[in-house]
Figure 1 (spheres, helix red, strand yellow):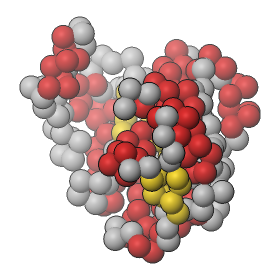
Figure 2 (cartoon, rainbow, N blue to C red):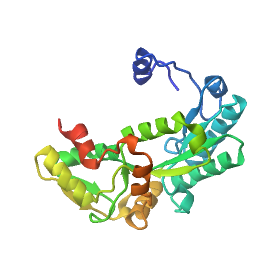
Figure 3 (cartoon, rainbow, N blue to C red):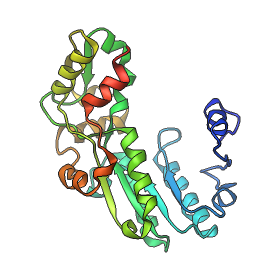
Figure 4 (tube, one colour):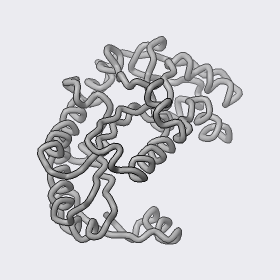
Length: 248
């Protein structure tokens, strides 16, 4: 959205061609997509709400059709198609349904919980605590951002083989207690998983998500996924933690 931002400048310095577009109004998207081999689309409700996410998805699809994009990969969220009632799951599924009604060749990717979410609690980790709004002994399917990138690149390498499919993807499924044990080993100091009730979360969206994670939770078929796409490498939580936190 800003070709002058520090991150955009770093991309440009690596030889990436930049294009500017507005995901809400759609301004600039068609021009940005023109001549592209494909589009990776990511919408967000976290700036202006779930209705805005559907608006973004509508603009994304319209621009893709206008530019005759041959293939689109949409980043949704795992379990969005299962009627969880989590607001941002439902808004992403609305975009999925709009895609299904279009004639665009596309694939849906549903990421689970990202490892990197842990980094938002750096101060607590420094104090030896990993607070999380779910039971410490319940598995939490999680995803490495590296693996998301590799997986999407795999889809773009052979669009015809994956068009029309929907994938919920996860790299690993540790429990919070297991995560704390790993963090203790990596950081060289005790870390304790501290569970708390999702009802304490002020955001209705996040409260609904952690209530879902505390109950049914994600249901990606990890063994089948990893067997079908072995070249992704699928980074375990422990591997990620060593790379992300060993210098902390």
